[in-house]
Length: 305
Image (cartoon, rainbow, N blue to C red; front, side, top):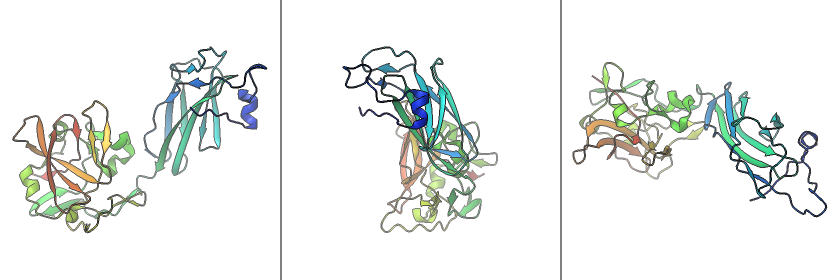
């Protein structure tokens, strides 16, 4: 493990962070290990307060010794420092940071003790303005495709589904990801989850449904040779990807590559599976698939009754 010491005039006095030897014969210092911090969600709205928790109960020393006191301090974007405590007493100390400007943030938490190399852990996030973050969509709220009226955005229904990367700030932009059971009842009154037959009746190319969207000024769809993204139907498909929870660990996959949507139709071969339709960046066809009803979470579009 690489061992580092912070050398600053301020911290040297407060934290006793010097490179001095423990005694005349010691040539290297033992280190603190095992610090962890609650992971920041990747996107937050500017103006919010973020609360981080440092887990210090798993801290240990490389030589199995016992420091007299362990302290904790936080650093944001290499410039702002805040000492949380000079002797950790709480199991999970908290640190609150106000997000005051747009942009990328890197937060580092340090645990320190006199006579030891410090432990550190880094987490990063980006502050966005959700009103301006997503561009390039069609200007209408619904799309009429072969006589059916579709809602032109991914469903964002309160009380169900999961936010992309747990970042609720992007719910109005990306919609939420739903299991099939959740999707079956998520559409608002007067609308319903489309069947596989209703999806297949669209009879358009994938490019007719794909929006040339940009998120934070970057193209959402991964580039592909020969792919014509026209969004001529005003469907506004964006590649949010999907959530695979088959291993009991939330894993968000294929962002930038796939827009996947549940149908109301079960798979004929297996009642534990349901059909979905998806658009992928390198094909001009609307693709067919089936997935587990409870562990797979996809986007949802609704059709008027």
